[in-house]
Length: 478
Image 1 (cartoon, rainbow, N blue to C red):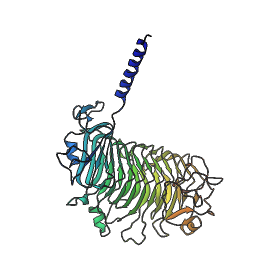
Image 2 (image 1 turned 30 degrees about the vertical axis):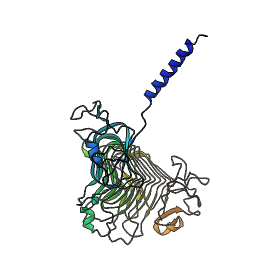
Image 3 (image 1 turned 180 degrees about the vertical axis):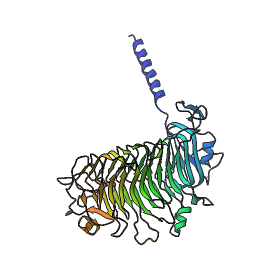
């Protein structure tokens, strides 16, 4: 019997297996850092952890890429750095409890994400975080506060930014972390909220994800200047300036909760907003466009405690220096003591659909309105859909506006619409908002994930009435 063909076939199969194995990514590795029990001589294993995360980053223990020379020039190609280092794309560095100081991740552009995360059950504490001139980093489970340091100096707690000399930043995620100026600000005076409060997260890079974080006792909350950001399911509780800022194109802001603004004017000259945006163009602020932003399912509450001596009024969604082009503003709840509930000065090719807005009380300032207005330079807003909204006032002007299926109500009659206004805005089954809307350009789910419609027609506002059924994305205001 001639066995040579079988042998050749077997060789070909073995070569194919070897080739496939060479093409598969290496198994991801886990490393450990322990500032209390680790050692500078450790190897990063669970039994012999490193002592300092910053020392690991500075010592070249991450195999990555960087620009071949500086200053960075657009069009450059990345080159390998730290070839053969133990930490590689796809790996995870687990942090154990202890104090890490100021962490800076720079000059490390990974081919795939490297994760830095709290080891389960551990609480790593940082003073601040900087990710700059870097790519493909995921950070999770951190406690970041200047109050963790021996001397408390206000700062911006987390910065994910480009650098004009060293290069841009992309593809970074910060999740499931706690950021705060101090753990308890109940003793702060009005001036303390201005001078002692740190700001939360500043995003200047592109394709940055900030999700499931808890931010409290801040000056500014989350400020975004980069493009294609995803800001999702964050809590901002207690701040003295703006909760969210979205200045970059195609930003996604959804299912965030922003509440409890502190300190008015005087002594603070900042005009406070739950969410704020403006354009920057050739001649400065208001001479450009911000395009493609989605505001979906967010809750903005000026104050959850009407007896708070430091509470003040807050503009809900305040966008005053357009143009704002191709925006979707849907399923948001605004509870505020101000006239500006949702306001756009210079809007085009956009829609404001299924939002709920109410005054926090029956006294001035307010009641809040949904406003579409001309740009400050007189150019009219155009081609804007305002539909299926519940609000205490409307002020709409422009060309080719589609205005339909909205309900304006007064605060005194809110009890006929909502379960327990102003903080529980679920609809009553007898509410005039139930089945009062239309499906045209309306979101297919409400703020809590309930499919629309539950009855024969879409309901007005952010909540679809659905009896006692509880859906995902629960954002009850009780």
